[in-house]
Length: 424
Image 1 (cartoon, rainbow, N blue to C red):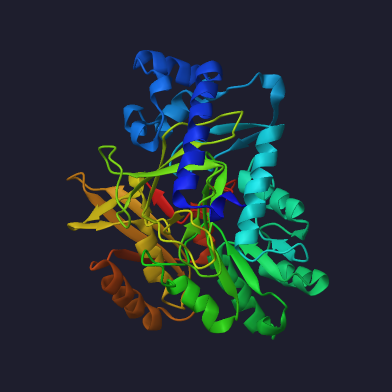
Image 2 (image 1 turned 90 degrees about the horizontal axis):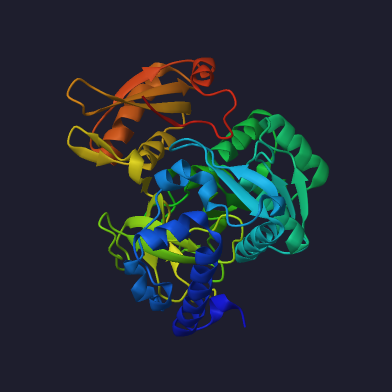
């Protein structure tokens, strides 16, 4: 029987046994956690249940960054891959993986594709980078191989080249950033390509949410599906946890793989939150050899749901990420997370690209300036943008209309992901 379809009590019992094994592994092999356990006088033999986790300190992104290789729990000659985080919310951090870690990564993504109706007969076109020490691209490729499906490794190239490869290889699924799917639609419309006869049935959406916190489709998803009869599957993952949460066809949150992670949703004081309450996703990795993590605070803000899913899985499910803890903005007395700004801008068809710039004023409070590249006239778009921002944020940030070339010049040339927000 799959772990995901077992009873909640059986899943809890399974994970608690894995937790005990992981604590022993950390105490024996991890320089960082050996020191942490000694410093806090932690007796791991007394940690027997989820309820006991509160007796263990959490690990932060700063801890991981400042003591990066103290987390290495195997001899260096066992490392076969070095990946790095994107550095979106700080300095990039190195993740060292063993052969078993890569196999675990492949298993995780295979399960994710299966959750998203994946089959061995599928052909997936990968519209993301597989180089630059980027774990996600490698993970998707390994998962597709383990599933027995075919991969078309096109990468993050132009819509024109994507459509040429779609025509040549006839994929039935794509893995892509949702905002890039809009660019595929624009190119298809401009070049008389009938997207609904392309054979593409599904999109595994990465990097951006396609749902609101209540799990309804957000503006980005609506704009895609107004034009393209495409099933969108939302995902959530991070390099540090080497695991993904992927939603099934019912679209009720990203499913948890209990054999790979223990998940907590914590408030600022470290207390476990209840179903539906938003807090920081905190994970304990299971089965990782190279750089396992214990009660690691990801910085991502989500809630969880625990009622059984109609797909038959009984594991918890995570909501879309509503924001990142260190990207919370206080603007004119209103708390704003960047995804809310993105959603407001996605509602305006004339907005083709943008960068949200956050600065501090003389009073040390946040200022928001949005640099926008338009398709169409400024007169037609400006009021639409202001109305959408006011409706979704209750405030209207400063707007600066620029060329697409200027926006590109604002972004780091070697970034793996196009920067949508800049903190100065």
